[in-house]
Each structure stands twice: as C-alpha cells, then as structure tokens.
Length: 437
Image (cartoon, rainbow, N blue to C red; front, side, top):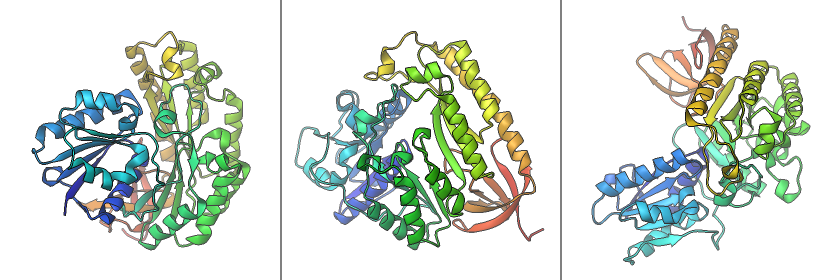
C-alpha cells in the first residue's frame, strides 16, 4: 500500500480540496501520512492567488524536492498548478507531476500513471468527470464546507476566474448531506465558504439561494451549534439572508464583507461596485437586525493610482464604520489581470506605510469594542488546552483569521462552554468560565 503525504498551502478552500483528496486517495487504496519523509508520494496543494503565495508554494516544493529520496514522487497540485504549470516545471527540479485544482479528484489514477512514466505528467484544465461527494473528516471541531466552485466576478485585480473557472454552485442536497454527516460525527462549527458565498444559486437563476441553503441546513441539522458564513459580497446580500441570520441563533452573528476599498474611484478601477453609500446602508440594516453582530472586512491598499486623498477616505470610512475585524493587504500586481495594465503603480514603501496606518487605525477600534464586551457572557468553542488555560473562539471570531478567547481552566478540545469576558486585548478576549471562581 503506497503512502501519500498532502501538504496544504493557501486558503480554507484549498484545505477542503486537500481533505477531499485525502478521502479519495483512501478510497483508492492509498494510505495517508503526515510525514512527507516517509511517504511514497508527496502532493503539495499550492496557492497561486498572489505573488507572495506563489513564492511560498515554490519554496515549499523546492524544499521537498531537495530532501526527497529517489523513489519518492513529488506532485504540485492546486491553484498554481492550473495558473502556471510552465513555471513549476522550470523552477522545481525533478517535479514528477502537475495536477490542476480542477482535477484533485483524479489524484489516484494520476499517481498510478506517474509510476509508469519517465517524463513529468501534466493534467490541467477541466476534468471530464465530476468531483465525487466524499465524506471528509477534518481535524478539530470545525469543518469548512465549500458551497461553490470558481468565480464569475469582474474584479480587476483577481486571478481566481482564470484559475478556477466560472462560478458553479454545488447542488443543495449535496451540501446539506455533507453538513448532516459532519454534524453527526461531532463537528460543532460548519463554515460555509466560496469565492462569493452570497452568489450561491445565482448561476441557476436563484436570488435567495444562500438563505434557502441556510434554512435547509438548519432544518436538517437542528443540533448543530454553529454555522458560519465567510466571503459574503455586499452586492448579493439580500433582506431574506439578513432575516434568516437574525432569526436563527445557530447561524453565527458574524458577517464577512470583503469590501476591498471605500473610495468610489478606486472601486471603479477595481471593477467593483462604486456606490459606497449603498454599503453603508447595508451595514446599518445588518446592525439593526442583529445588534450583536460582528463585522469583518478586508481592504487592499496601494492599488494602482491610489492617491493620498483616496487612502485618507478609506481611513475615514474605517473610523466611521467601526468594524470588529479588518484585514489589510498591499496590492500585488498579477500579470494577466486588468489591474496589471493600470498606471501609476504605488511604490512598495508607500503601500507598506498605508497598510500600517490602516491596521493602526483599526487596532484602537478593536480594543474599544473588546472593552465594551467586558462582563458579557458568551459561548466558547474550545480548540486547545494546557498550562491551566483553554484557547478557543466565540461566535465573533472566525477560525485562523480573527482573535481568540483565552479561558481560565483546562477543558476538552471540541467542547463548548459558557464564559464571561474579564479582560479585553486588541485582538483577544480573556474569559472566565461561568460558575467557577
């Protein structure tokens, strides 16, 4: 029985693909291992979204190539494999195969063919077979569930449509069955992800597809504690979706709205909806429906042509809106995108300075919001424990990208407990279990 190690880089959507690939390979008779040094084949699920991610993927592939034995196979899979297979072949010595992000479900036959070849095998583009509905078993108490593939958005800076293809919603029953299976195996939090989760069903002519999906999940898995949405683009947030989230406590009162900027001219150059007032009204509607909602967003600074005045408008917007969480990213020039043709480019030192100023502005806001929570009771999903404390998250924090809840006492990972906020930090909360001390 061949042993396979899968190394995952990039976003939660890549993690879902890796988990599904692992389930597929197990069905095909392969044995999974966490130790690449002892594997017969190593698959690196790469990220190709922006230049730093590509560099990380290439660095990891070269590192593994330098350490592997002569009998080991090395495969580059995922987004970079689809975006630029030529780069991989040119810069990773001894690479045996390239498997596109659109063809992860063919990993078993792919590995079998590699053993019979002397030259690298390259499988890119769309598969001729549909991806199977596999039962995954992620580590921990949280599981990501992908509700769609690809993206049909026009964003001028993004390579995802080229990598993943157009937006394709998964069948509703398939998603619901997957969530029910995960909930039945003890997972406490399901995080629904897609490039644009709020576009779910729109490729089939459905305007409220995401709300219907949520309602169906909640009916089918009534004991599931938390369902969380990520990547909710504002132009597709409907009144029914807000109402569904506001009336069902299983849905985390958490909205992730990747806005990218707040100046109309920059948004036009990004090929994003430029009506900032519409976004402000949407945020007001969300907060009226859910006064305890936690709002997350992300912005790009240093986009081509971004002036000092446009950046100052972004800072004012952040100060006025008082988001709970803000991600700040410097613009990364991506060949083949519309933004790559725009001038003038903002110098790298200016980009970094603006990112620092944006994070500094948000840091004080986050601390003020956290201080307002002192004394409040919330559920905590425990993710780890040791040295007399437990570390987890409240509904206000998404895994990997937001803050932590640090609770006095050691509790079993995967358990949920009631705790009270005792101290506020910029990004984390210090909490105490209810009924103790």
